[in-house]
Amino acid sequence: MILIGRDTPERDDVRQFLAGHLADMYATSPPESVHALEPAALAGPDVGFWTARENSRLLGCAALKRLSPGDGEIKSMRTAEWARGRGVASALLRHLLAEARTTGYRRLYLETGSQEFFAPARRLYERHGFAACPPFADYAPDPHSVFMTLRLDAG
Image 1 (cartoon, helix red, strand yellow):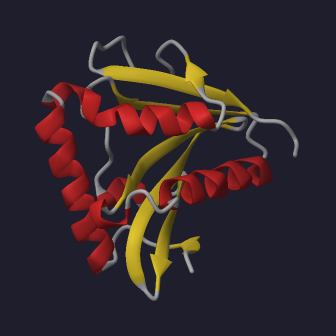
Image 2 (cartoon, rainbow, N blue to C red; image 1 turned 60 degrees about the horizontal axis):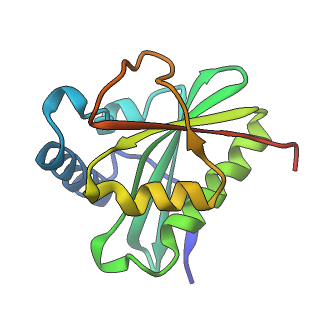
C-alpha cells in the first residue's frame, strides 16, 4: 500500500532521492533552465513537502510552494524510476490538489521541461486538468520550459 505523508527533504533517503532528481534536471536542461529546488529550499516556511512510501521505502515526492494567498506552485514532483507505472505520481498529484484546496488555493501552477524526457509528466498534468499558460511568478519565457496552470474548485 502506498502511503503519502508530510516529510522533510532533509531526511537522508530523501536527500539522496532529490540529488538524483537534480542530476536528471541538469542532464536534461541547460543550467539556466533548471528550476528544481535544493532540499534546504524545499524545507522553507512557504513550502509543504510530502513523500510516498511503501513499507517505508521511498517511492516519490512532491512539494507545494505558496506563491500568494490564493496561488501555489507544484515543485519537485518525482517518482523513483523503479516505481514508475504504479500510479505513484497520480497519487501524489491528487494529494497535492487536495492539500491546495484545503489551504485555500484557487489556482495551481507548475513549470516542467519541454524536452521528450518530460513528456510523461506533461501528460500526467494534462490528465488532471492542467493547461498551458504563460510564465508566472518570477519565470521568464524559456524554450526549455512548459508552464501549466489549473483553476481549483471548492471540492
